[in-house]
Amino acid sequence: MREIVLDTETTGFEPAEGDRIVEIGAVELFNHVPTGRTYHQYINPERVMPVAAFEVHGLGDDFLRDKPRFAAVAQAFLDFIGPEAKLVIHNAAFDMKFLNAELGWARLPLLPMERALDTLAIARRKFPGSPATLDALCRRFGVDNSGREKHGALLDSEILAEVYLELIGGRQPDFGLGVAAPQTAADLVNAWRPRPRPTPLLPRITEAEAAAHDAFVAKLGENALWKR
Picture 1 (cartoon, helix red, strand yellow):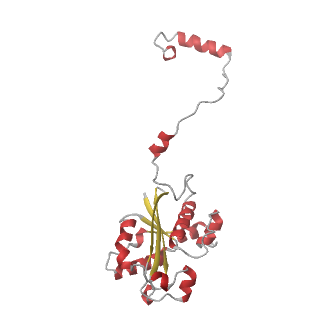
Picture 2 (cartoon, helix red, strand yellow):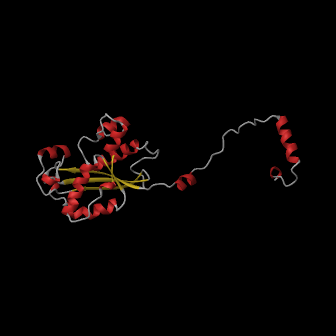
Picture 3 (cartoon, one colour):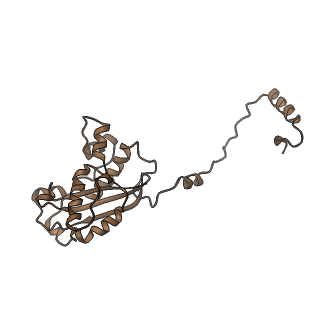
């Protein structure tokens, strides 16, 4: 099962009021294990960044001026997420609203809301009445978010991937964003081999039990399995 953990950064809250996406970050999971494949793109919003947005993202007009517009990178983004993978997003309605606005302006197919898996909704169902921000969930699960001084789409996606795995039942023992490729169950089985005990176990049967067994086997004939 392929999933894409996704985050966007925007100039504001409403695409209908002219706000745009300035950054997209995404992490690929396969069977809940990171594959090491990521997507990251800064985007020229084609408008002046509000001061508040600059303070949150640490991005400014000078930095974004030479970055590509969304329409120029939209197909590469769609190719990365693919046609069927679930999109794991914290507060999915917000990101999907902006992604579909940008895709619409680029005259590309929109993303069905059914593809989105909202970790905010999952957290609120699992911990009703408790804070469900990404930072709060990091504190709850002991996920290191010390590098999150300013919002960043790729960093937030990597952190959200860890939080998501905790929300659905705990991180995989080999969880790591540097894993080159997912291992199959057959790979794991073939890679494991039992090792001999350094000290053999002492027999636990009595002499009488051993003699009774030998007498029983003797009655089975020369083709008995225990005589081979």
